[in-house]
Image 1 (cartoon, rainbow, N blue to C red):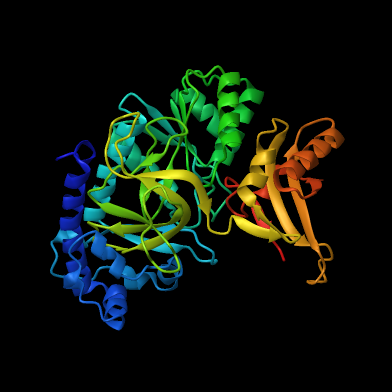
Image 2 (image 1 turned 135 degrees about the vertical axis):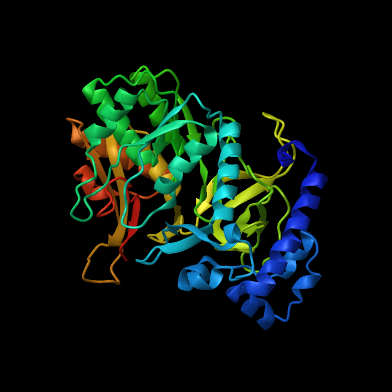
Length: 446
């Protein structure tokens, strides 16, 4: 199959436009949500012929997918079997209590294998690697855990699962933290694949146990936002363990997009498969596409899907795009440029607009800090009109907590010009109830 990443921008755009016309035609025949929305807007979908024409279509807010995920499934019984049979359902978390299902046909699963193979090529993961899947078993099948095996298949790598997570049901299949450490050691894992906060817990425990992690060369992290300080902390731990490498591959993506890949550490993220998805950065209020290099809301359009299909879907992140050839690897196609600002990262506290990512980053790099959480509430919990209370909750094994608290207060003040209270807590209290492998970094209780 041709590799669009090695072709010109004009060739990529022409290929994507052809795929777009075919995808929109399928949606016009059998996509409940878009048939309704486009009809209400009076749009003749046959008139959308180019990538530039996409701007005439309305944006799809995430809340619409969450409210009625069934209406986003393509419903065309005349398609070939592999394009309509359901291969898997994976779930994406959202702001509601119930996760949102994303439906994948056999066609979609094969497309994800294709995308994953490209991700492996770009990031340097190959057939000689052994991947430690450190993602938790959760109440619903989340993409991170389910897709770990698919990523290994695509790269030709070996994989095993440590099965962390809080107990669910009667079968007691979840394993403790030490099992993850000893499994990495036993199987000579070369890649630690998981949520940054839990990967760090594994590394810190490995240091305590003096485990042999000399085979590890890379941490492949995803599932929660990470900061430069967190990634440096992972590298510090790998160095302390005398790992054979200290690469931290920060995967960007989502259940709806799949993964984007860095060709070098701290770099921008390549769209590995322009054959199957197109991206814009847009003004979320008007839907107007913004020029490359301008920060705005990321919108994805599926070009070749058969299950859950999304057109101009707002992912919920603020980024910019660049489409010039990559100076590091020479590949063409679009790349997402950070920093990635998640929706809700900017929060008003005590009258000031605070970037939560900056606040967390100010403390996250302290080696004495094992776990970290920021909580905003009211000074008087019984009085919703009382002033804001900013609390930094920290798990630590440091002997001198008073000195650490002073250091944290000073760092937060330097970063966001606000003085917090510091509370010392048990590490597990910072993790999601029932999961215990994904830290909840920020809570707003007002």
